[in-house]
Length: 198
Image 1 (spheres, rainbow, N blue to C red):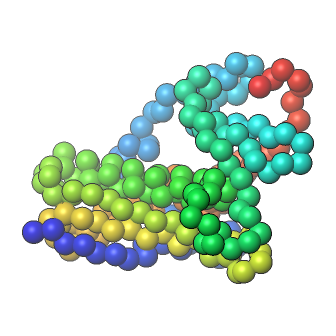
Image 2: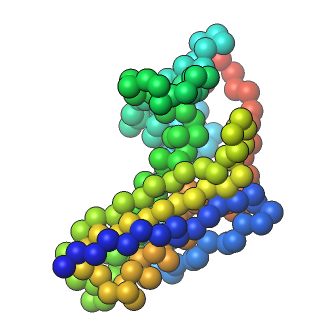
């Protein structure tokens, strides 16, 4: 039958003390990606985001995805008052969007590992029924810069202990986790661009 296991599979901390992610050979992430040239022809990208805000308002329209295939969502800073006092849903903050991206990427990386295991006969096609992932930052009260990130994974399905260990190990290969861990060779750069570039 199905078995639920909840465990913290990794913890992201400040770059100086970060453990390196587990590298998986022959995974989907290692295969050539479809790169899209941006309109200005200056760079290519496999993913992207864009934001638009007015004046001093934190309310920001965010476009997630590559140019021409974007989904819009409103992002805002949480109110000063206790957000639990309101029954109304709050727009995600920028860090919420990052945590959601980390959770989604972790889930997809585990699923990709499962597909490799199915193809090799090490996992039944219907053995993994569901992957639940929750990513939460570790941030002291009153501060904006998190001290770390905790990723929790729950695998639902008829899996052996060995299969669970192999699937959970795949979470370390999540590209978003590696980005947050400071493993990008070029880092993050910012530059002002001419009007009309967006």
